[in-house]
Length: 223
Image: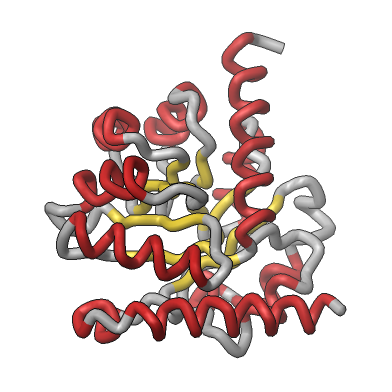
């Protein structure tokens, strides 16, 4: 095993632990750093211990830095990572993990060598196999509901028994527990608990309530 392989193994182990601990990974798009901090605090109040801030707005990197600095107890990651250059920028801002919507080879190599826990995105068995061969053991299945949903998750269990998934895309409060009941699902991603209208209106209490309600439903489903 090379040093790079060992490092990827370590960061994948950390990524799996982070996802299993939070169970739900909120996918958040923010308009300001202050908004990012408020959302992170609301999620934490509802019991969620990680937040993925997407790189879809000019405020994203500043928001990642602010959450890392000002909110204890929640891991802040960068989502919608598309290029190796973005990895460098979000790492400098303090991002603690990375999530991609898809993973071409150049991005897979950069994720493998960056030293941060990474959840690379894939939509097909072929893409998952390629990431598995590169050394990744946890992947984002995206867009989950559009590419097969629960039937696909279940179908992947036998051929890819040692790959854990974080299904994201089209998942809501009602079906999240069903995904998390599958043995190859470490976490589910989604935005149902961080609705854009709630955030725009400053209704962070609703973010906390939806987070707590979703975690309670997952707990009941798991017995």
